[in-house]
Each structure stands twice: as C-alpha cells, then as structure tokens.
Image 1 (tube, rainbow, N blue to C red):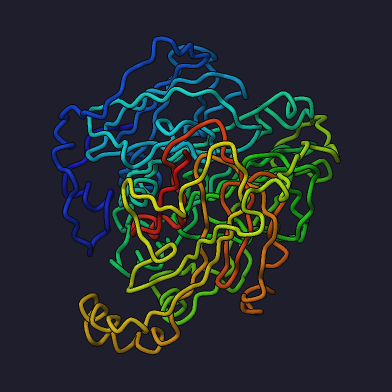
Image 2 (tube, rainbow, N blue to C red):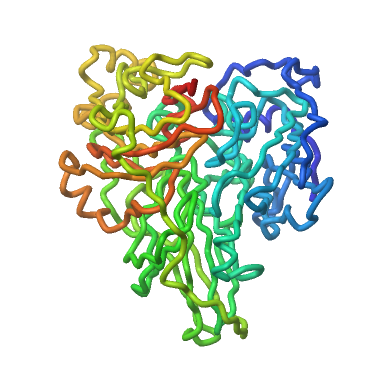
Length: 549
C-alpha cells in the first residue's frame, strides 16, 4: 500500500469539507511535529497483559479502477502479549479489529501521524477518565498518548474512533474506525461461531468525486445541520459490498453502523427473520427474531445467520427497507434532491452474501444466552424524579437542554454521585427553525436568494430529526420507550425494529420519542461525555460533559 503523504490541497479536500467549503485550520502548529505538553508516559507499575501500538496515519488505497483514494487509517501492532489480538479487517483500510478478554490489562500507545490533533475514544468501554478519549486530551502530530486500563466490560461488540471536538466527523469519515471485541467466560461457554465464522460488518455511506476522492460536507452548513449522507454504501470499507460464505455453516455477523449520520432499517430481502443475539455491550438473555432492525449511528447488533439449508451457489441480500425518517420541512426536501440517490428512508441494497463455498460447522444456538441482571428501578436515587435531557434546535444550533459544548463545563444537573444508580429521561423534542427571528437572515448568508426562495416552504415546517443518544463510560438498560408524541407515520414504519433488552450505550430516538434509561456510576470519578452521535451534530456542539464525583 502506498502511504505517501498527501499534499495540502488534497488534504483540505479529503480531511475537511469537500469542494465548496473553506475552513480555518485549528491549531496549525500541531502539523509541524511540535511536542505536545499533553503527551503522557507509561506507568511502570501497570503490568499489561497486552501491549499495543495504534498509529493514525495518511494512506492511499485502491478502491476503484484508476486513481487511488486518499484516506486516513489506524495501523495496529502487538508489542507484547497475544499476537493474534490485533487483526486486519480483510484488506480494508478500516480497522484493525482488536480482540480482548474481560480481566485483561491493556496498554495502547496511540501515535498521531495525522496533520491535525486527535484522540481515540473506546466507544462503550468502562474506563477511567484519562483513558476515555475526551476532547481535552487531544495530541498533535508526532505525539503519543498512552492508554492503560483493565477490561471491565462484559462480552460485547465495541468500537473505537477519534473524538477531537469539531473534527470527529471528518476524521471518522476519512477512515478512522475499528472494532474492539470483548469476550468473557460466560460467552465462551456458549460456543458461538468463532474464527472465520465470526464476521465483522461495518456499514458506512460515502461519496466520491470523479477522481475517486472522498467528498465531505459539500453543502456547507446545511450538511452540518442535517448530517452528512453519502450516495453509496461501503461494507468494511469495500465498495463492492459482497461477502463470501460457506453453505452448511452458521455465522455470527457483528454489525456496526459506522456512518456519520445515516441509520438503517436492515432486513433480508427474502423475508428471512433477523435473529439477534447481541446488542452493543452484551449478549441478549435469549435470541430475538425480528422482521427488520433499526440500526442507529454507532449502534451494534450481533446476528445469527444459519446457512445450513442454503445450497451452494445461492445468495442472500440484505437491504435497508423504506421508512419515514421523521425529516419535516427543510430536511425532508433536501434529502430528495438529485445529488443524493440514497435518500434517508429509501430502500436500497446493503450487502450481498454469496454462498459460493462448501463447508460445515457444528455451532448451536442456545435459547439461553447471557444472564441479564437488569438494574432495578427501585434502587435509583432519583426513581421518582428522573434527570431530563431534551435534544432540540435553538437559534440554528443543535442543543441539549438549550446548552452546547463546553470543553470542561459541567452544570449541577450534569453532576452525579459515585456508587449511585440513576434514571435519565432522554427526549427528542425537535425544535422549530422559524420562531427565533434570525432564521431567514442566517439562511440568507448561507445561500443565495434563489436557493433560499426554493427552500422557504421547506423551512416553514421546522426541523425535527432523529437523534442517536450516546453516553460514555457506562452501559445502560432501557426501562421504557414513550412514543405517544411520535407521528404515527414515523412510528408505524419503524416500530418492530427496536431492541430494548441487554446492555446498551447508544439509543436511537425518532422525533417526539423519549426513553427512560437506568444506569449506574461506579469505579471511577471524573469528567465524561454524553452527546448526539450524529457526528455532524456532535461537531456542531450537541455534546455535553457529565461529572462523577
């Protein structure tokens, strides 16, 4: 693989905002290899079972005929410990896949060779503040950040990605994402599919120009407010989206929605039910059969796929089925424009499984998977008065309870006590765009009068969007999902696609929906994040700190 540095013109195109967006580069001195004062050191008293090096760098990959595509990628290497713990994701520029076991102590030396600051977040993992990948801990080009933590999570499909404020969207879009898979004794006793039969499936949407280069945010602020949608789907970073499997076998498919903003209604084309065995941070207590699954941004599901009755030479196709995404007014109109032939909520093919090889295995699906041990609402210190967090737009800005991002800012309502259990209610209350009086002025600055007039009718309806809620540091249980204020057209198109069992760290809220979550704050004090995982919304400031003290 050619890993030559890209020139500055192409870097701006690849790493930032596409052909029509100009950005003032943050902290350009970090591009000059200057040492960062935030560089930390190895703790000699921490005895790591697994010592890894993870480097973020620029590269060129051959995705299409003709020109190579400039991407950013993580490169992993085992320095000490199990040499198979770091695996390539096929021939993809995504990854690597890191496999660990509960109880192991892990050291990860993150080296930043990007031309801007970055930091890595271990999505879904229960780690101390210094190891969570908070934006305040970013490091510059040439610097190293050392993570040292014990694996305390139960078996599940987790992942890792950059988390610098204002730059998470472009860095993930350029290719920086990998799976972090945890196993434990409980899971291993089940003898689920392993090795070649345990298959990661990372779903992302992307857009490319005529020179095979990634294009991002080509509609400037509108793409930021709406969230970026590409016009083609990639599976594991591969545009041909085809997997080769054996008949006579069963597989475990670990789906990750690694898209910036797109979410999916996943279903097998032939009507075969999806058999779900895991969600985010745990196996389920028993398999769940679903006609389709709504997979929000950053969510993961583990799917049991039985090919023992499928003949060699046949195939299975997974689609995203049509649904009402809840975009009203401006958002809905913009999604249908000619630029994007994959509007959110339309039907399109996701991947093709070619059953082109013969084989057999003897994995069996148990009807009893993991012990759930759901948190008891009676133990919550605020059981009669849940903390409430409303996601809505105000003055052309996505907010949480009317607030936006502050690097270390935290309010009293965002401060919790160590060793307590709480209930949080997360509400997607949307928010009109015309009531603040500044809408037309700001739109006038963003677009010319002709475009503004064409969008006037769309703006009248306001802007209500789905929001994927994610909280760092812990896994929660879903207590209830209130859909009484969700438009019936939206709800009827998605209602059979949610998994509310198990331990989760991300939940998709359709417009008008609210969910009550129960969670426990334990083991570590510190400053952690909660935010919308629509990466463009996050980068715009729809993210806040919570503090455990």
